[in-house]
Amino acid sequence: MQTQQVIIITGASSGFGKATAELLAAKGHKVYGLCRRAMEHEKISYRSCDVRDRAQVQAVVDSIVAEAGRVDVLVNNAGMGIGGALELATAEEIDLQMGTNFMGCVNMCQAVLPQMRRQRKGKIVNLSSIGGVMGLPYQGFYSASKFAIEGFSEALAAEVRRFGIRVSMVEPGDFATGFTGSRRNSEATLRDPDYGPVFSRSLAIIEKEENGGLKPEVLARRIVKIVEAKRPSLRYVVANLEQWLSVVIKRILSGNQMVAILRNYYKS
Image 1: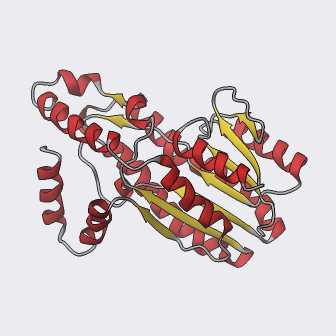
Image 2 (image 1 turned 90 degrees about the vertical axis):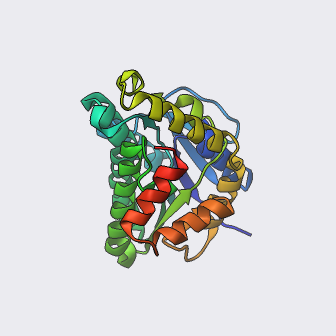
């Protein structure tokens, strides 16, 4: 029987976060779900928090430690996507994309690590993406935010292992979640005579793949296994066979070959 763990999950109001929080709570763990809007659940303690706000993050983590006495697991799931050409991205769009996906992850890690070091024990699970393994056209800053999580997580794993803290990354492929509907698309790109038609064509492919993707419960079950594993691995790819193979191929092909494949796939 698994010992009850105190678990913080960000972005817990929908998609991966909600499915994971519900599965972990059903297994008897003490789950704190962080999200920007007010939520209620009989088995999940929801807290309002914008992961981009360092002070707010620290205050929420401090309140959880004060209440529960410890933090065993952090699942950094909060994220969003902005579609459009890299050239035309505004400063506000870049800040929002990197601030939510990457700095949100950093803020949460820095808030929980002092407690985990005191415990000499803990797990951190950071949600990356297949887009963090290869640069996806018209999702460039999304990919950049996930590439940043990859580098950050590898370095963090090397730094904190001696404290009994394990770091894992999960790299999902396409999943049918609310992510597609909530993506913000660059109006400047859509209006641009050079980029607009190609972006619209690529976006149709992206949305079709996402809407036909795996169910979020598939990823949630994998995260539960990571949370309950004694010695989880650094990296997990969770995707259909085609996308899993694309990660393997990326490690073999030259850069030019991979760019050609991505251009052909996304009609860019």
